[in-house]
Image (cartoon, rainbow, N blue to C red):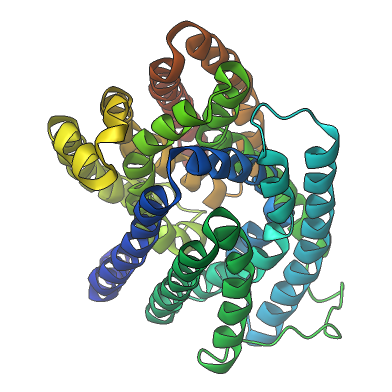
Length: 419
């Protein structure tokens, strides 16, 4: 049985991997273009404002996409899948509308460390609503194992958004990037309906007796909180730097150091997302889970080790050639975070997603609660002591700590299942 699963995965995996790599290269190219076109101060303002939006988006749709991935994977027929999809969309839009209101309140009522960031943040307030449709249908296509369609969906949408945003930056600089993003979301929605012919949300199909709404909400709730706390590792550093250092230029320098290491996190995410339905479907069999986990982890261990080494050695020419000489100070934090990539790609990402696939969202939430407290304290004191280099070191420390906790938790769970 397991050999059949591996053969099926191998037949499509390379195509999906190449498509996803191309898609993420599009997104990475956008980051580089924005750095070059905006200038250091404007890019620093954009980084801060987008960091605040990302902080709120850690509870994006309150786990609607995670719920779709989990429960659509389990659904027995198309009608049940559509009901879960419809409920997730309704609940997610409602949640993200509240998030947008909270972003507006934050921009108007909370003192901000960077001048002019308030107006940029207000302009981004509706990003959560515009983004949700894409996130939910990404999860739906993964859950139904429409891998080729999902790859095309990702490539076309990212390419469309990049082109629209470049036009916006070229015409109107910083605010063009902000407001043209909404135009990109609208066009992505139309393309999804017309070209991909994805299921239309039916607001009249919701019947609590045919789908497990309470169970769906409970799973999504704990899953989104767990993912939110994990995601803080990628958000807190820029926010803490903003409030401690209060320098848009220095914030831009640090952000540039994170762009490449954070961008290539898509590689372990692709592997885990591709195998996720298999982990869910075999959640009752610890031996198959161990086998799949070893299969993914060993390959990521070797791959990410080589990638980390290359990034560390080639840090200087990469930074100067891609981002320009004004970002020379990004080299050292870049090298530190590049080492951390080996840790997160091999251990933290894989173990954390396996726990979610096993339905242990509540356990993940409790574990990441502990990690969150440690993360805030360590990042704050490291930034106070070592500025942006301290923030980079804090990332590596937290990658290591969270990976260790995830490994031990998964090992104990699989041991108990074997009894």
